[in-house]
Length: 336
Image 1 (tube, one colour):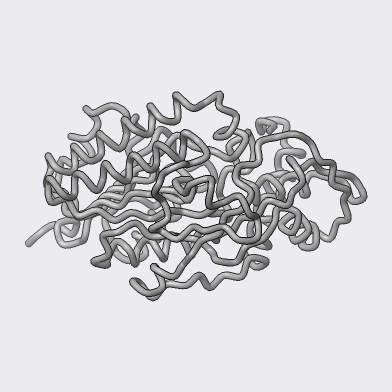
Image 2 (cartoon, rainbow, N blue to C red; image 1 turned 60 degrees about the vertical axis):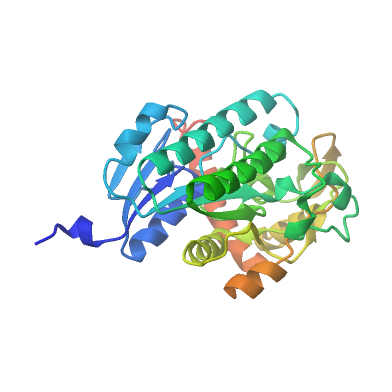
């Protein structure tokens, strides 16, 4: 009789200690997969349900013989050197971002070919889209086909675009089945919420949760820049649909409801029940407008996000409020 793990589909999640990777592990386990997670660290906020978890550096090619020592059906590659605008757009971290992420992707692909992995997923980003199509906050153009002529607004975006070509090349030359999603601002509970690598929803939830009613928070720039934000459970659903599909081209995975940073802040304030003043300060803002065009993914996968932004923010704010409260009441917790 075969061992149970031989009858289950087997998946490796690279970046399983991170925000989306941790949620993806939960989803795969709920579907009956045997899951091996790998990352530099364990998930920070809750226990991983992965069947096995290896703490290791994916930049090290010797790690992969351990990861892929048995037959693996799917590899999900979400590991990257990344963060929010304060980390990616200052220019101070460009070399690390490009070097670390490129090494990981080269290693993942080479190992998948060597070990006969059937299919690999890669998490790209909306940051691949050219700056010239994102100058108007009210009318950005982020259709998948508009990515060329290339002009990403950060080295992070350039590395993601290079990686997309890398996955395409390995698919073409080695027959590796690849699936690529361009994520648009994924948010939700158990994501990075302080320390400089958090995204706008988490940063605003933290600032508002920590502020006294009638006080003030800071926002970088005029707050008129627009984005769309996708709840993490919706993201994971799209990833699973994509991985099980025959769609070989990159697709947007995001919400198509565009909102300004000012409106986002007002929404979180309304959820919190607080009235706060906004102090505007200099800081990196990224492109003026970005919104997910979901025409392709709807046509190919029948996927549309179902979680309303305010509902997702309520869940996220409640979780971050709890983190802020714990930090204030527990002197052993590190401060932001």
